[in-house]
Length: 233
Ligand code: SF4
Image 1: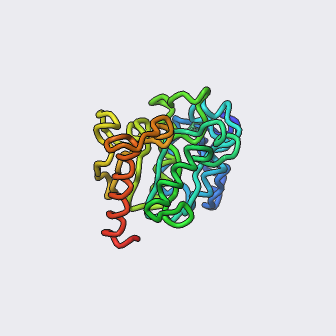
Image 2: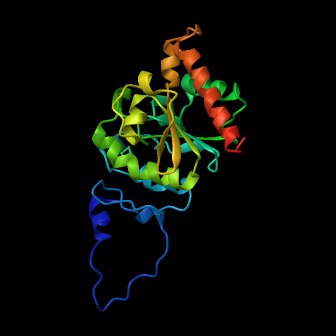
Image 3: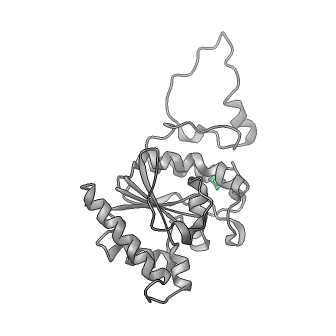
């Protein structure tokens, strides 16, 4: 959809023309950053694929091969939110594939959690930043309405934020990831826990007590215990 036709959606209907009957057409959702996406715009996470693949709310839309929406169970009790797609994700349209994704699956399996049943995985930004750079605050803000719709639709009890950028994208928290990982935060009735990004664990393979991998193991056990406490496991 061109910018002009997006703006035309907001033209005032002439008095002599009856308004169109209300009906949902995801292709007509405005995708410019200055046009809001109110809560309740979408009825399923799958619907987001259409507007996100047409979206130019930020500059990242210019170079994408695929917008990366999410994978896993759309009714899962746990949502994992990462930063933005990398090259393989951009090519496949799926988040957390490749080595980081493999490690994440192993971490979840270590406490008997699976992406088919227990987890829905997505990112703060749906399109790949050039050279895998960190998304800017403006790019994160432009994409946030889609993420808020995903959170509303999946309605997880627990949200895990992988890495510092995911934390900055959602929580008003300035402390670094090493200071806040493993801690529970509460916001809008949901429990949030920052955890290390799997890519960081790949760069720090030690399993010694106190190492990033060891700390991740503590965190994932805490998450598993909380899920059981909530009667969701
Ligand atoms: S990153 Fe998000 S806001 Fe930016 S173009 Fe892609 S879908 Fe739109």
